[in-house]
Image 1 (cartoon, helix red, strand yellow):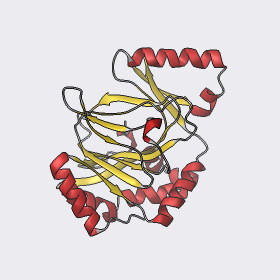
Image 2: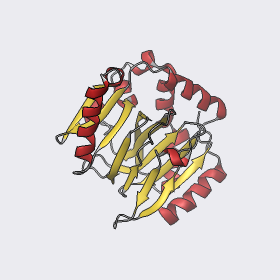
Image 3: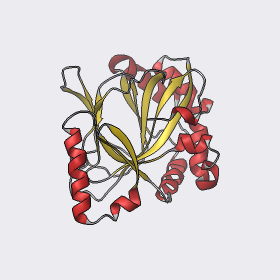
Image 4: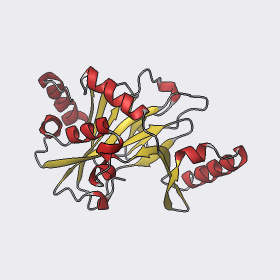
Length: 247
């Protein structure tokens, strides 16, 4: 499923050493990319995630989309008010890791189950160990993420005690995304200045060491396209299973 050539790995390795982040175009074979994107488009139930009052919320995305305009406007105002106070996010997710460990992923989405298995195979993990100079990487967790109009993820560094995260990855599958639509992965200095920007590109793997400050910029008003990615972390130690979650 993955198509990571020796040349691509070598170039990514050099970029990672110089910048602690890199992008690899054409990470999946063309046929696999098309199959995975079709499987993602067939997902029936997405979860809208955000924080309100400092508490994480999992909401039914389809039900939220059907809210009366006034109720949805009130909800969005509350989300933005919390964003002004600190860490905040608003996007849709489908939890590959939890569904795999729960034994339901293969039945719900067999192509996505194949993808998750590939993420935890030598075909993916060995190149990642090389690119990152991290032979200790033992597994990957993952979720689907979908950013639509107004969705965002404010600045954070992915450093969470006990998660043993070596690096984060974002395998973007959306084709034809434009930088002025938002949804850009931005990296920042410790002083809050923009250090780098990764505009979403189809079938492109973005990889960066943890911790480092970054955000996903808001998807602009009026953008009908969706920023669709497979997002996760490369981790060390024993895979703890679904009780650890992937957030």
